[in-house]
Structures are given as structure tokens and as C-alpha cells.
Amino acid sequence: MSQFILLFSLGGPEVIIILFAILLLFGGKKIPELMRGMGKGIKEFNNARSTIESELKEGMKEIEEKNKADQKA
Image 1 (tube, rainbow, N blue to C red):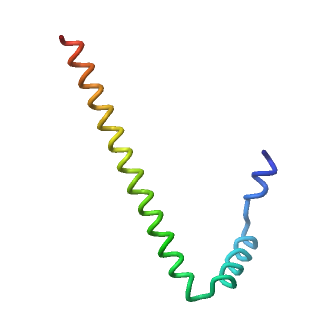
Image 2 (cartoon, rainbow, N blue to C red; image 1 turned 90 degrees about the vertical axis):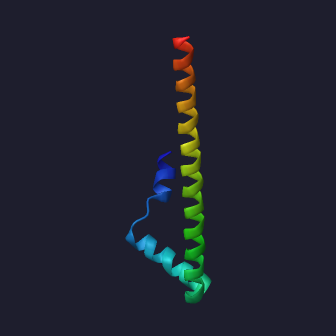
Image 3 (cartoon, one colour; image 1 turned 90 degrees about the horizontal axis):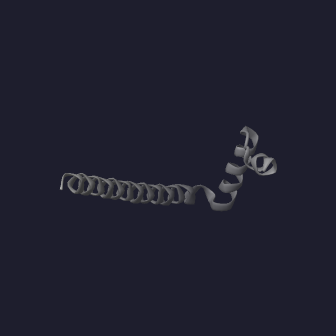
């Protein structure tokens, strides 16, 4: 487990090297397009997450209301 943590604990120099490699691989013109696509993906993920969360809350409310109605009857 500690090897896994060490593998992904990135410092300043490592991040700079990774960013430089990305710049070399994709070029300066493609990076904004890649970031835009990543932003859209994150936005879609957050929208789906909030939709699922609201549906779960709504379902919980319905169950609570049903339980209250059953207890009164």
C-alpha cells in the first residue's frame, strides 16, 4: 500500500515534467481543446451526480412519508 501512495505523491518538479511532456506530445494548439473537453466531461459528471443525488433524496422522502402513513393507520 505504501508503494502505491509513493507512486502518486507528486511534487513540484514531477508536475512540471508531466506538463512539459504533455506540451511536447500534444502541442500548444491542442491543449486548450483537450482542456475544454475535460471541462465538459467534468460538468457532465457533476450533473449526473447531482441528478442521482436528488433522485435518492426524493426516494428517501417518499419512503419516510409512506412509513409515517403506515404508522398512523
